[in-house]
Every structure is written in C-alpha cells, then in structure tokens.
Amino acid sequence: KAGNKTTQQLDFIIDTLLSEPTIVLDSTDDSGTKGDNLTNVNKPTFLLGNIDADARYVTVEVQHGGTKEVLTATKDATGNWSVTPTGTWADGDYTLTVRVEDEAGNEKHSASLTVTVDTQITIDVIELVNDNGIPGDNMTNDAHPQFRVTVPGDVNEVSLSIDGGVTWVKATQSATPGVWNYTWPGTVPDGDYTLNVKATDNAGNTVTETLHFTIDTTL
Image (cartoon, rainbow, N blue to C red; front, side, top):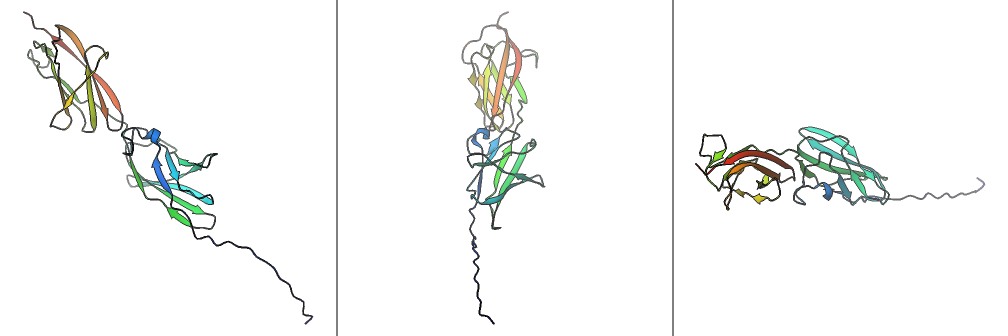
C-alpha cells in the first residue's frame, strides 16, 4: 500500500556445450609398431585429450572378457590428463571409453579404443634339418647346417648365431605360418656348436633359446 519497490539481481550461466574427449595409448607403452595399439606392458598408460577446463568427473570404463572396470583419470600440473590401471592386466583385448562430466552436468563419451596386451612369446621347436646321423642326435656331416625354427604366428623376426651372439643372421619365413628357415652359406668347420635362436613378436617381446649340434665331416 505504501508503494515501496525492491529489485534483486541473479547472475546465471547457461552451459550446454562439452567437448568430446579422446584417448590414445601412451607412445612409450606402444611397444610394437607405433599406432597398432599392441603393447607388452601389463600396466599401460593412456593419454586423454580434448578435456574441457570445467570438467568435474573424468573416468575411463574398461571392458575385458565380459567384465567392466572404471578408472579415475588424473590431471598433472600442466593440465594433461592420463590414466593407468591400478593393477596388472592379463594378456588379451581391452576396450576403453572415456566419460567426462562438467560442472553444468553435461556429459560426453569418447570413441572407444581397443588395445591388446601381449607379454608372452615362445620358441616351440628348433631343428637341425640335415641331421643325417642318428635321428635327433643333432649331428651332421654337412658343413652348411640347415635349421628350421617353429614359433607362434605373431613372431615377425627370427635371428640365429653360432658364435655366442657376436654375429646374428636373420632366418627367412617360409610359406607355412610360424616356420622359419636358415642354411649357413659359408663352410662351418668341424666341431661342437651352440646355436642361439632369438625371436621377436609384433608386441616387441623377445626370447632366446639354444640348440647344441655337432658338425663332423671327417672319417
């Protein structure tokens, strides 16, 4: 009735925008061919990108073998986001998706990233092909010993040495997956030898095995 009036002001922000995050395997843990998302690291680190400054929650969902794990990402002093599993991962495929929520409640998910953890490598069989004495005694009268190495199909290099690893030669992959061959081109003198075989797979794993053999060309 007295005609008094008052005015109050409320400042508010409308925020409907949120960038779509990205995720990549840290290049230092990408142990095979760069960009193939294959690693022999069982606690790999992932780098997150395109994270807005007002992000409130940044998590990474990991799917593996029918199970789900949610990891919380961390931001370093320079503003870069990353995530590393809390425990070691078993060999296999893992699919990761980033979820970001900002202060306004907007939510975005990244495109999924699938990586393969591979920490195992074996050499299945090493054979002296021209073993012409008693079968399996690894003795030959051929001064050009021929070897066959059988390995898993993901092995991409097989090297051999008969001088204790001072010099290495590369075997040739045959038409049969996992089978590699090498014949010594020069004459190898009579004597007892230790063949070292080194195999490397696509994930960067390396293993070395040995075979003892004898060359005897005299009677």
